[in-house]
Image (cartoon, rainbow, N blue to C red; front, top):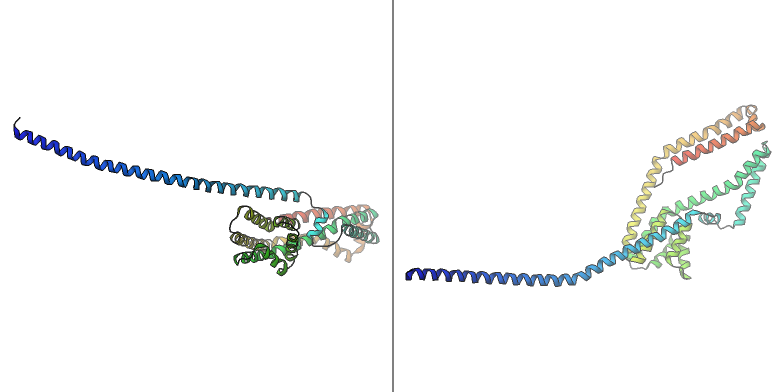
Length: 329
């Protein structure tokens, strides 16, 4: 091998060594930078991991508290729905009478109807059945009518009541002051119901207990929603004004739906009223035209049985038609 060949070989070897050194330098730097990035990422994850775990734990705790709150409210409401005593019915109707007065009025009503039927020429058995039905049915029907009317009036203005609380909370007023404003400025029966909450808070009754009392007297879905929202907000926190504002929108939509259902069911209600009024109407017209023809129903045992059977079947038909046009939502 001559000298020129050795020089070329040495130059190539030195060039290869230089290229390898330069490549090793860049690779080493890249590896070190990657290691530094990995160390920084691990440190950041180590700092963020406790915060993420705390956030998960807080959301889990809030979810459990909401579930426990809803479960306790459902249990209390299920107990309230099992039996409704007459005293509770009187309170829901907005009457301030004693139980003795109610039972006395029921007895007087039954005796009056019984005497009227006996003086009309009906048999003692029919008059006794009529008096029994009047004593136990008519006063309770009046209570149910007054209860429904009062509950409808309450539900009609309840969304406006929630709006008062929303505006008060947004302006900086505490919830208790908003309740006092409702107890003095709202129409009946909302004013009297919230007056009970305000007066109860003066003697140590909590807001949750006061809402339970309202739900006992006003077992409405609207009151139930309001009670759940306030109970969850007190235990888990959150934006109360936003939650109540959403609830107010829901209640107004339910009100619109109720009005739409009533409008759509008016035809069925009119048909049911006409069908239900035809038999007694025809009977009265025949009685005025030909009383002798109808006296058989009132003076004979077979006629009395026919009257009782007819009233029974008519009552069943009216109840079935009422059930068919009574929409629950």
